[in-house]
Amino acid sequence: MDEQQTKKVNTYEVAKSRIKHAVEQLDLPMDVYERLKAPDRIIETALPVKMDDGSIRTFTGFRSQHNNVLGPYKGGIRFHPDVDSNEVKALSMWMTFKCAVVRIPYGGGKGAVVCNPRELSRGELERLSRQYINSVALVLGPDTDIPAPDVNTDGQIMAWMADEYCKIRQRNDFGVITGKPLDVGGCVGRETATSRGVFHATKEAARHLNLPLEGARVVIQGYGNVGYNCARFLADEGCRIIAVTDSRGSAYDEKGLDPDSLLQHKKDTGSVGGYSQDSPIKTIKELFSLDCDIIIPSALENQIDADVARDVKAKIIAEGANAPTTPDGDEVLKDNNVLVIPDILANSGGVIVSYFEWVQNNYSYYWKEEQVEHSLQEKIMDAFHEVYCYCHYEKDGITMREAAFMYALERLAEVMKVRGWWG
Ligand code: GLU
Image (cartoon, rainbow, N blue to C red; front, side, top):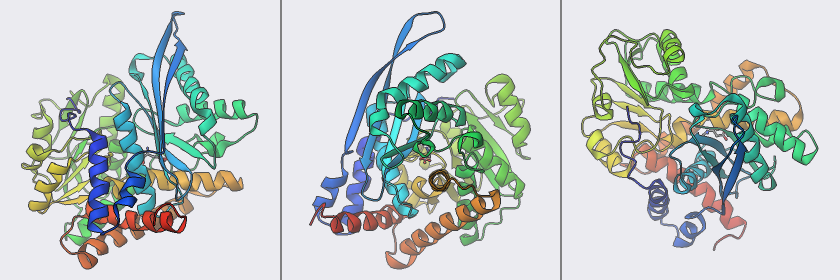
């Protein structure tokens, strides 16, 4: 199933328009927008890699550093064949707002390599990952810019990248990258952190709507790390996962899919497709228009536009992915009273636990799983309540997305002003 059906939307323009809208809503001077409308720096780099057959293939890599007023640039690195500089710029802006909304001392960054990791051998993937770090090492650092996993990258790739960085700097600076395996300074619970955060936020939203999770029907787009773990956490809570799609197919069962055997099927065949005999879902629109209570988009950007949004029957959309809803999709969802937990809040669990990992690396002292889980829950629930109250009591009639952007922007504008960046 083509996850990028609606990708004609320019995500960078969307990011700018969301920031401008928040500046206007808060009645801040346009100088604030001027400081935030473009990344501080974007690097585009050629990455020549020796392939297994001995030939050289040159990939393109990006690192965008949006804003560091609150702390070092922070954000994942994605490997995807369709990624471009506009997408990376936009996603780095999202990170600035994400870190500000959950009150962690980071700015926003994002990286990418244009490649299809499915077509690369393990050796090629390792050489490409190391080459990427070689190209951008000079602008990275535990106090400067800290990458992490994103779409199609994982702990092993972070380990190669951290190792390469340490070799270049001739010292063990593991805090330069988060999302590492436990053996190289990773944090327990980092792998499931994004989904755990989505789960806590969804549960809280359901509570506000008096929607019992027991028996709630859930639809999930994307079955990578985030999609699978969300399915697992929600199924454990009694939800029925009625439909799941990935880039190649779909699975459907009104009685509820078993997350683990579905994952096994995906590992065996490369897709969730074919798991259930005849899934009726052939398009994104069909997926999102299913009769259900909760939708978790956990694939790519721009999936829910106005056309798709019109048919949404769910009461809650929890954005596991970054920027899955377009601005016109948002308007329709608002009119139809769908509660959207925006990406910068819903999926912030990943970067929150990245922050815990970095703190532990800095102190060389490691926490137990209970401490990580407790602190994650506390942080995301605090942010949820701040944003929820902001949109229901302080500025009535705005969406949670608008509230999250405004709440984050207030903080960013305040700190930029104190530091003399405007005003
Ligand atoms: N890639 C994740 C995100 O978009 C995690 C970023 C991080 O941990 O730095 O939030």
